Image 1: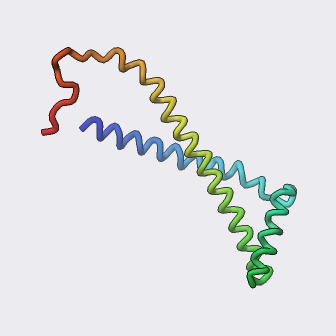
Image 2: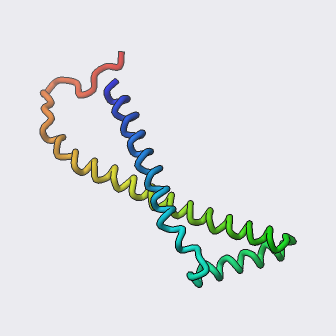
Image 3: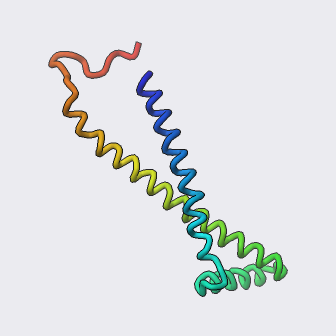
Length: 116
């Protein structure tokens, strides 16, 4: 029961960590989409032209291009956040790993108890 409870709490903690980091990284990445950034401007105009070539009006093409750029930022923020989440799990495992050597297992006893 403690293993299941610990797993559930661990998943909740990591999920909360990742969700908060996604919003933080999204706010950090959003300023890169501006008219001051030539790469973002070129991408925006390129997407606008692609959507116009597909038959959309200029206003609709601009909205769609902005939605694509915002989606890209959100995906990048999620990738960074999940990488940090896995790093957190790895660091916690590395910190707890030495405790395994302090566990005392008597010879002849089963390591895992029967389920029922």
